[in-house]
Image 1 (cartoon, rainbow, N blue to C red):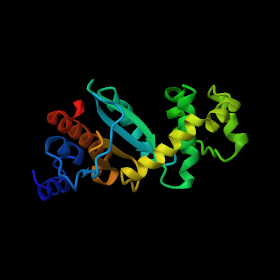
Image 2 (image 1 turned 45 degrees about the horizontal axis):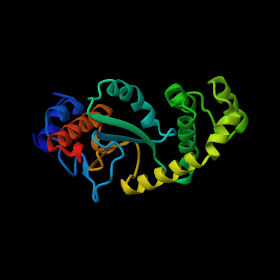
Image 3 (image 1 turned 90 degrees about the horizontal axis):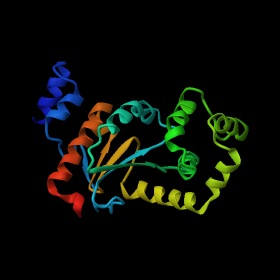
Length: 214
């Protein structure tokens, strides 16, 4: 189905964009971008899917419930990981928090709660007192969190996140990368459902080409 017909059907209310994307072949340069040069993957033998996000992004927050549901259906030959985008210095504290949570082994426990705190409770992590209270309420010792933030491992991952943000040519979030070959932006997905549907199709495209074994 060509682009004009898809948009016409959507305008007539015959089907949502996300449904149309799931039924039609995505178009390079419109529904997704072919990444040049390709980027190396960190999960050999699997189809790597990266979500680039920022805790302060309302669109990333709105995507999270759908993403959680989508992840439960992720095929076994795919591997998913989150990378906190670092597109400006203002984004760095949130990226540090993610990697500190990861280092402390509490990402699964606090990831959604941290999103909620920022967008619903107006948590200001620049306020040490406010942030320390939030950490304690969520079972994270502030002193251990600060120690993790300052650790070599977290600082190395921060530098790597900044490098990936450039290498994948990000200009906003949420965005996804599939096996170092393709990226999908929120604008290209057009809806949250359309964004994830395109990622599904790109996973299938990589699988068809046998690229996961390379």
